[in-house]
Image (cartoon, rainbow, N blue to C red; front, side, top):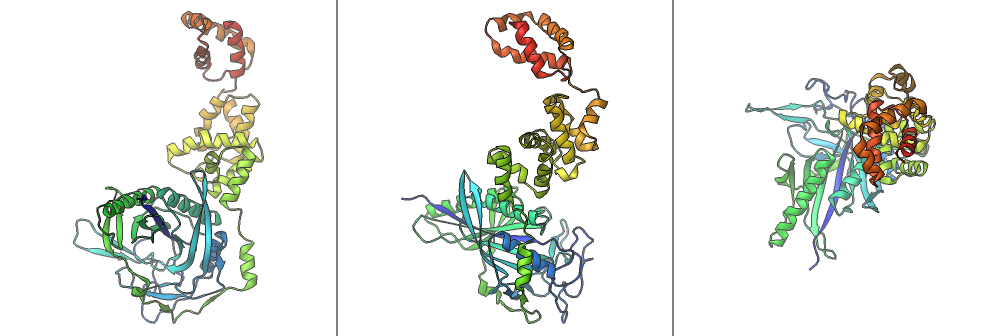
Length: 474
């Protein structure tokens, strides 16, 4: 009998980077004192009238255009009715029958294969508040600062067949919204979060009963939660049991999903058009102007960078990991050899950023400094080893590389007469290794190279050392 196949769809909520909320002028700034960014509208006071944030409509349309969606030039807000303490009005303002964007797609590469993931719809809605359950106290609190924050929900088709495909799609979507500048994409602060719908079936049979997974706040957790859920459902089916349609919460600490509640259907929310809001109408000229704002998107930029550098996709992906990184690389590559610039970023620069757990924009390093670093290595002023060693100082201080290496006396020694005495000393100090090398153990050349480098504190010109050693060792 055929093996079970996973069927996965994602619902991604993206917080839009507008200064104010979706239906009022309250600030969307994060980390403010509880209930300080609240007014009559976002706290759901009777009689308070919402007014649509035009910039949120603009940002939602950009997301749709970037994902190949049809933009509905007339869309309607609806009330999604349910009760929860962090939803003071007793309903969420969302879109149902007439969302702003529909029928798009996103192509992702997984295992060398391109997969097309359909996008069913993108709709606007306001966020709920936040429930805070106080530890050690028999009490819960509600912070409404987040209530009314503008979101777009991006609903995919159930086109993904593995956790790896789901993560690839999610990363591609994250890149797009951050490239567009419509969201900061901060998963820790909840600016970019997703729910996963997972089911299993045997190929050629109808899709199985799905479970919705919540509390997926990192790419790693998305992968782990989906993989766990696939295993859980497979065990049930192989034991002759049924999968229950429900919402499940992912526990990252225990790496399990646990039942949270029964899964609602659309009719449970009693959607109806919001009587306080007129339809959103986008004119032809406005839509074309927004279309003209689209930047070069990550996939197109990746293809161009691969052509510029000759790097494989797995390496070049780092160069487009954020718009800031891509802009940084492109600027530096205009002033020095692109492949060498890319190699410096992928190697010593990224290693240092990983060690600090920070982004390039958190440092003082500039594209001009990176280009100069590549040029002085090419020109023989310093070795690649010295270049790598000074990257931490360049990230910290903002000093230009040539000035730094001259100030610290790190200029490469290329004078053969100066190096000859050092090479002679190394050979004289290691007679056993010399005999072994001359006896055929040619790999010992790297040993002698290392000894000379140690003696010169990494400043010796590798090409000059290689030539001297080859001549003197015979």
